[in-house]
Image (tube, rainbow, N blue to C red; front, side):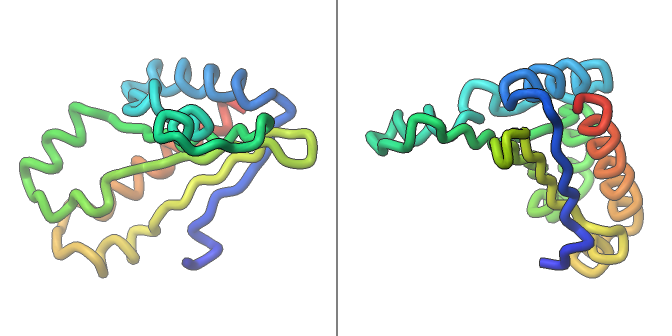
Amino acid sequence: MNPSNLYATETTKNNKQFVQDLIATASRNGFIVHNETTMEMAHSFGRHGVEVAEDFDLHMIQICKPEKAAKSLQANPERAILMPKFIMTFTGNNKTQIRFHHFREEDIRSLVDDQAFPASLADTYTKIIAMIEEAR
């Protein structure tokens, strides 16, 4: 993984508040959190009988713009490998740590032979980073 494709930031908001604010910001921008009921990994692991530390607060937030994704995937199902977009949040150093791995346009172009998709997906990544900034 190229570190330049890793967006890393933090906020003084607690993890729960940041996630709530991110969901609200995403909604205002036409996005949804696809896995809102399963993004808290402590709960997800617990449902499978796996215990984690009481203070384990990792959230794996899958963000999606359904209308755009549906059109994109119908145009070319090969795009699906690059479609899941996850924002990771967890507590570290008494702050909420936020991580988002994304691809640059040239990387997308090298992975999927598709004229319109690389610029469109790169634009979506830029919007997601802006939403993170707004929510933090």
